[in-house]
Amino acid sequence: MPGTAELVAIFREIADLLDLQGVRFKPEAYRRAARSLEAVTEDLGQISARGELRSIPGVGDAIAEKIAEYLRTGTVPYLDRVRGEVPPGLLEIMRLPGFGPKTARRLWVELGVEGPRELETALAAHRLDGLAGFGPKKIALLAAALARAGGTPMRRPLAAAWEIAESLLAALRAGAPVDRVEVAGSLRRRRETVGDLDILATSTAPERVFEVFSALPQIRTVRMRGPTKETVELADGLQVDLRVVEPAAFGAALQYFTGSKDHNVHLRSLARERGLKVNEYGVFRGEERVAGATEAEVYAALGLTEIPPEIREDRGEIEAAAAGRLPPLIDGPDIRGLLHVHLDRLGGAAGLADAARAARRLGWDYLGIVVAEESGGASVPSLPTGGPKVFVGVETTRVPSGRPPGGDYWVLRPAEGIVAPTATGAAGATGPLLIAHLPASVDAGFEPGQLRPWLALATDRPIAFEVTAGAGEDGLDSTVARQAVQAGAALAVGPGDVAATEWERFRLAVGLARRAGAGPSNVLNARPVTDLARSWAGRRRTG
Image (cartoon, rainbow, N blue to C red; front, side, top):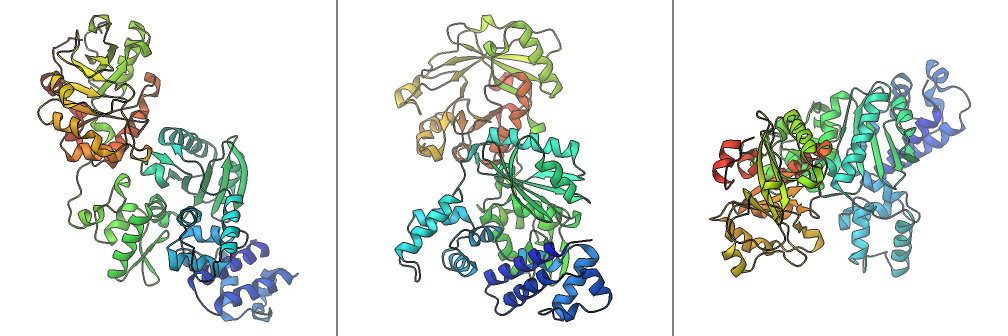
C-alpha cells in the first residue's frame, strides 16, 4: 500500500507549485494537511475504510478525496495538473538555500527566469540589480547559493553526449521493464552541445525501472527519486533525468521535454487561442485530455503538421506547419555514401575492403576515399566488381588550383588562419571542391560572413561544405550550415574522422543538416552515384 510519507511529500509539492502560481490560501491548506498526516500513527487505509479521513485536522472534503484517490491508485492526478502549469526549473530554484516560492515566483514573473540556467544568465547580466527587494547582499547570497548548487553544468559535444545516451538507453532496454524509452532534450534536437540528458520511458513498474537505472555502473549519485522521476549524476558529472510517464501522455511528454523553450512557449500561446491547454501531460480542453499519446496528435490538436525535433527553435517552423509548408528535410536513408574517408585510417587494401562491406550494409553506393596531395590517387587500391563505386579525393591545406592530381575532387582542409579564400585564391581554384574540417562554430567566434567568399564561388562551381558529428570543431555548425543552404550551396554529411565501425555517427551529421533546414537536394552525398559521377567527379573510376 502507498506510504503516508510519499503522500506528505506530494501535498508539500502541491503547496509549493500553488505558491509559485501566486494562488492564495490553498498552499497553506495543503501544508497543514501534510503536517497533520505526519502525526498520524494509524494506517490511512483503515481510517479511510471507516470514512473518517475528515477527522484528521486540516483535511476537508477536497483533500480527503485526494487522499482516498491516492490510497486507491498510488497517485494524485491533481499534482500532475499543477506541475504542468509551472516550469520544472522553478522548483529547483525555490529549493536553493536562501530561496523560497515568493522569490522564485518574482524571478519568473518579472524576469522570465524559469530555471537555474536562466538565473545564472540573469545574474551575469546584472538584471537583478535595482529590482525591489534585491539589494547587493541578497544578490550575492543568491549567486553563492547557485554556485554551490553547481550552476550551469559543462556542455558536452553532441557526439560525446550521444554515446553516453546510447549506452544508457541500451541498458534500460535490456535490463528494465520498459515498454518505450527515448531521449529528449537538446540531444534530440541535435544541438551542437548538450548540457544534460532527458530520458523518457513508459512502464507498469516505474520503481523497478529506477532501481535498474540507479544501479548502472555509469551512475555516481542519485540526487532525487520520486514516483515518476529520478535525477542522477554520472561519473563525469553529467546530470540525467529519467521520467516514467503513462502511455497516454508519452507523446506530450516527449514533445515538451524535447523543447526548445521558445518553441513550447509559442505552442502554449497557440493553444490558448484555440481554447486549449498544452503541457507535458497532454493537450486539454478543460479537464478533458484530447491528445497526448503521440507527438503527431499533439501537433494535430493544435492544427499543425508534426514538426521535426531538429527545427523546434521558434524560427518560423510553427507558422510553416500551420500553413502546411514545412520543408522536406534530409533523413538517414537518403544518404547514398560518404565522400571523406581517409585511406590511411582504413589501413590499406584489407581495410578498404572491410569499409566497402560496411558501406554495403548501410545501403551505400559509393565511397570517397581521401589521400594526401603528395600521394595522389594511384595509391588507392581497386575494389572487386560489385562493390561500391570509389571516388578519390585529394586533400590539401592550401587553396587549390588546377585539377586534383590523380583524383576526382579536391578536399580542402584549411590550415590555421585560413577560414575563407582571398579573391585571388578563389579565382585560381578549379575542379570540384569539398571544404572539410572547417571549424565553423558561431559559439566559438566564427562569423557567418566569413563564409561569403566561398558561397560566391559556389554559385558557378561544384563546391560542398562538410558537416560532421564533430559539429563546429570538425565542420560547420548548424547556424553556419543554414547560411550555406540558404545561399543554395551543397552540404556533405559524414561521421567525422572515425573508423568504419563507427560510421553510424553519420546520423548525427544528418541531424545537424536537418537543423540547418537541408533537404535531400541540398546534400551532395544524397545524390545517386550516376549524378555524382557526372556533376562532381572529374573522371570515372570503375569499382
